[in-house]
Length: 174
Image (tube, rainbow, N blue to C red; front, top):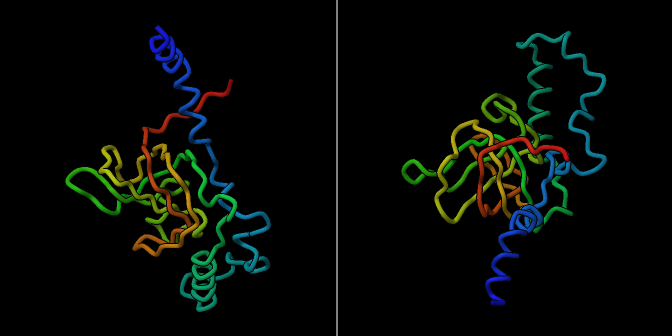
């Protein structure tokens, strides 16, 4: 009779345990306090530069270098997290995906320049995942590490060892 009671309790509290295992984080948490993506470009009036202006090309190159080297937040290393983002599949096995980039907004990494490295997560799963499609939003659950990785779409400042994914649905405020 004790095991039946335990089973009932586990079922009753399973949703609470599941959400506690992967606390939700927002993309802003990935940016170290005090780091400003545009700091070096204050005072530069891009509106006065044409696309073909060498100063505009130099500014874009400088921006890309700065963003590729954007610092990660060391306090997040080894943390279990749940984060919502848009997927860019990298490695496939049939119609399933084992590696993808997770980015904070639609179109990130497809357009140039890609977001700063601290806004790109390289997600890897030991098992192939269904439902990871180009620029489709999802929830990714797993362990986050600070690990820089260059990909064809941009430099990722984080790695997520994926435990599971779920379709994106906004969380409702209580």
